Length: 363
Image (cartoon, rainbow, N blue to C red; front, side, top):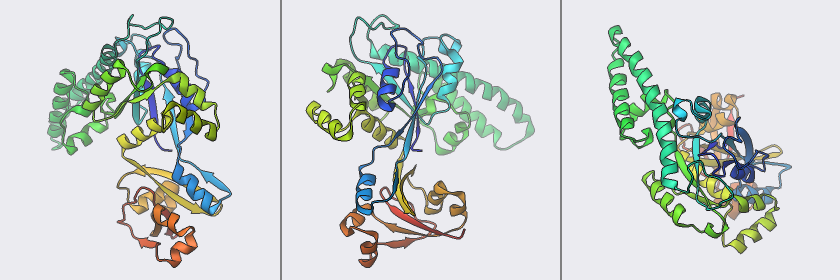
């Protein structure tokens, strides 16, 4: 699994249309609020040109991509933190994702109603952000009440937890999401267990019409907001992505070229998600299967082996590694070994993006 991405936004912004386009799913997409009640789940293969190139060289019987899980969550409305719309049900689904894709409507269409009556990305984003912050404030206040009672126990860790919760509450009260607060590493570790909604990484998806495919005044505004989070918005036309999803790879490449695009919306969205979560990909070619694996940047070799099987992490001995670029130059694993391009690394080796690895371990 690459990562789990929750698609959120106000009703009728095109979440389900985009979800269907990205996943070839069958989520209902209608012109009325809350046509999505239960979250729709879709799993897609992560496009990986390196994996395809390796497969062309070694020709394995089976090639397995890493995957991305999309969760299309029901539209949020003003007052959700107090139970409006689908309220806590909506917020509960967000707590279970790794990263949030916030879809914002950036197209004009009189035939598609807007819950606020007009297209206003700033207002739309503020509504969602406010509801998530209010939900987090409730979580923090509950933890504060519980922590204050624990002061009497004399546990030396409690005062630090109390001060951290107070600092986070103060920041949230000013309208800042938790991810944008200036917290020390120890403070982040303290509040991680609270699973705060606004601590999750977020990126924006500007849903435009075909005329706005290269951006419009609405998506330009979202770009300014995203910059404050240190991210780039993904500009997508849901209708065009739906067309792309129906094409085979060759037709897809030609279609994108005609539109002046290098990548599909799915590919751009995955890149942003990987960057936000600081994920990298390594490859294994064992037996009949060539496989891609997604892990956090900086993961040590034994932990990466554990991604495949826990026994491999426990019995880890060495990792036999060849760089992707070196493998392409050599043209085969055998030639790579003959040229001394394969090296052995131990337990402290941080796996690098694109590494092709064979793990040695005691079963």
